[in-house]
Image (cartoon, rainbow, N blue to C red; front, side, top):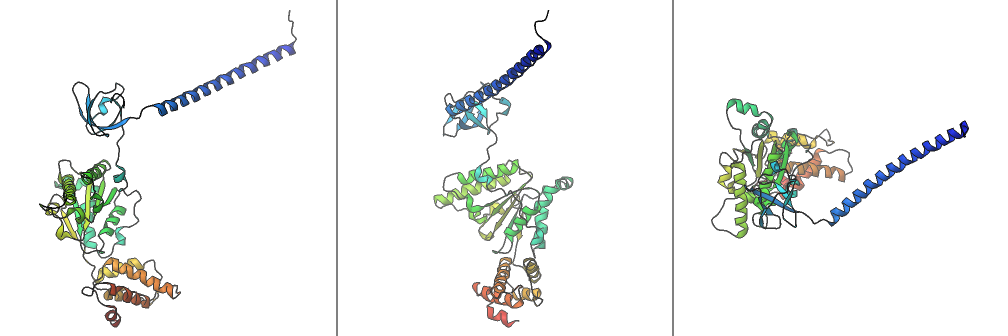
Length: 390
């Protein structure tokens, strides 16, 4: 005999169903709060935990221990935690040591020197070989030495020869050596690491050699790669038997550079470019075959070269119809690419001063008249003689 009507039964069932749903909601909330509690407990443990000490693994011993050089200075014989994957433990890797027992507790990822990382060109320059005027032979040699071995190494394997390791660009200032390097960085799809040789002259003993070592280690890891050293003579000058402590440190840096270029570790798909204004002071050890195999002279441009340079720098300028680039090229005899660029910029300023919308031939004449007297009298014409030639 039923004591509840059908309406009361349905009400009870709905209430029970509501309670079940409420229980599920509370269980989900409890699970969420438990995860939150565990997270904050973990964060507290991290804040309270002792910091780990970074070290470099030197050698694995037969008894399962390891010899490491701590970043704090001393070389230690330490135990290895059972949680560490021993297959990753190789000489040279970075590990973390427990501060209390100096036990290896973790293998650290590859640590890249921040100083070297800043040298890597992340964004490709927009400069290409089309932006280089009057250096066709130099571009051809750079393509053969740098670009071709990186793009088509099988050609050299088929012939049975080893491609050159590096190319040294030399010549007067402003003739396009660094511009060629920027063009290579823009053309070749490879990691481009550029550094000034003066950056390797460090005040601490061994620091310059360490930077050289890290640069080439990074280049090998990111191959295909190109290492460009500007103003090589800053560290590559001829070595002397006597000198100050600073000069001896530069010599140590140079010795490390020689080892990296032609040492036991092959460069493989790493190519080296360098530039200098003073090839006469560069150490002969750098110039011998096997290191900088190609010495490419970058001379001041000839008439055709100056005309090409003028076309490049005036391609985006608004010019009057009376501007004769070939005549300007003949007037700028003895000037380098940087000089011609400065003249084009000065001509643009001259047009701006007279509120003109385009640059005229007279603006270029005025620019030459303002710029040329700054050059040495023995190697540059004076402004009066250039104006007379018009």
